[in-house]
Image 1 (tube, rainbow, N blue to C red):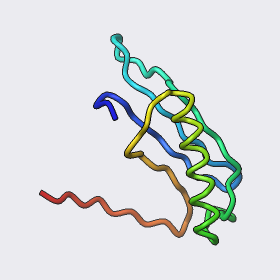
Image 2: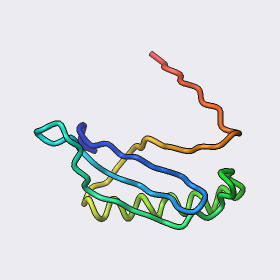
Image 3: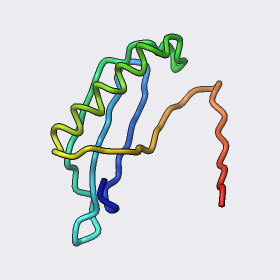
Image 4: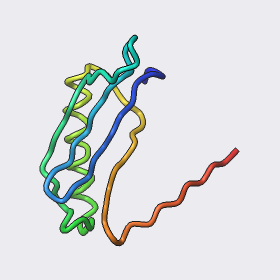
Length: 92
């Protein structure tokens, strides 16, 4: 994956969206590909079937990769819910 490529993944209750973009010469985000899938395995913001959720994520990512004509190897993920706790760990 190119260094200036960014990938976002939004995992919602009704749909999962993957977006691939890069910063253009003017510093603005250029969208290269978008993929969407129905959010299976997620109910009210809670993953209750991990296998279905993984399949939905894979479908959205594959659609975005096909649209962008790129293969990605990492994403930034957005997921919300009262049950979510996040930790930021840096290992040197």
